[in-house]
Image (cartoon, rainbow, N blue to C red; front, top):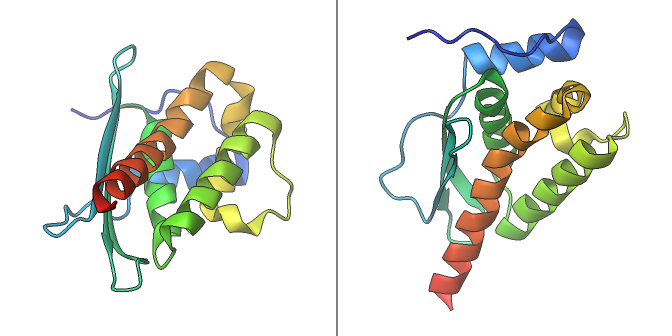
Length: 152
């Protein structure tokens, strides 16, 4: 079933969001995931599943990110997955915190750490949809928390 975009996105940022929605990145499941998490929003049916494989130094070697639901969740999950490669879990957490703050307060134009996630600033015009953009981040945070509790 083809899902139509459900938020009017325009301009360059809207195009980038729609590209990630139509052509999501990093969707191949990982057989050797060290970090795994799934978050589900029962109110709208959005679901984000993240898997991370870590190298011997604890940095992200491979990422799998699959989302079901609206265009925003699918784009946000794809965008986040592209930024995690090579990062430590601490760096991934810092990235997530910057994104959470940006979605709440707005991002500075020079906030290059957020990469394609900056395009989701357009969603701030629709406050009810911010939760959609943050769901994959919540999955990442919960996955890291669970991994760290297992490791200790």
